[in-house]
Amino acid sequence: MSETSQFTDIPAGKIAAIVTYLEMRSMPQRSEATPPLPGALRQIEQLDLDWYFDVYKRIGADLLWFSRLARSPDELASALTDPDYAVYMLEYEGQDEAILELDFREEGQCELTLFGVSSGLVGRGVGRALMQKAIEFAWSRPIERFWVHTGTLDHPRALPFYVRSGFTAYRRQVEIADDPRLTGALPRDAAPQVPIIEP
Image: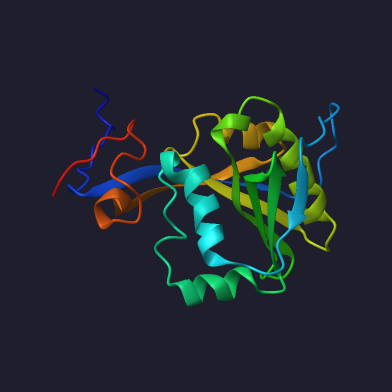
């Protein structure tokens, strides 16, 4: 073991992730043809939280997505319906199978706050096509910076995907949170690749 290594215990009942922040300062040149999206991408104007949570959990439960579930419904609805916050869903074969959220509330910036594709569409070029749309939407406004963060609990290909899409890493943090399977926000059988450590 290196003398510079440090190990920190994570309390029982918690989960931890290394979070990497990435940014792009200008719209990247497209280096290859982007496949078309396999369904209809639409911006959500009228938000039904029950429907939203259903899609959110279906796409993100096995990645332990929990940030939306930890917020009060009123607070979340207020953020998601802000005029400078855009929520998009991709409908495929009659069901919403991908989600994209862009936050323009900070002047001159856009944060890619949520980006996910259902497991059935992973590996079919849908993520690449959806990212191209996200980049186009973000840079269609007068911004100077487009940024995103991803963690080690996310899909293992997420970080290299963002780098290939034109983002550059600039910061790293450790996030520690209550295990959402123990709080009841997600079912106990979600994300079996991450063992539950009971408190």
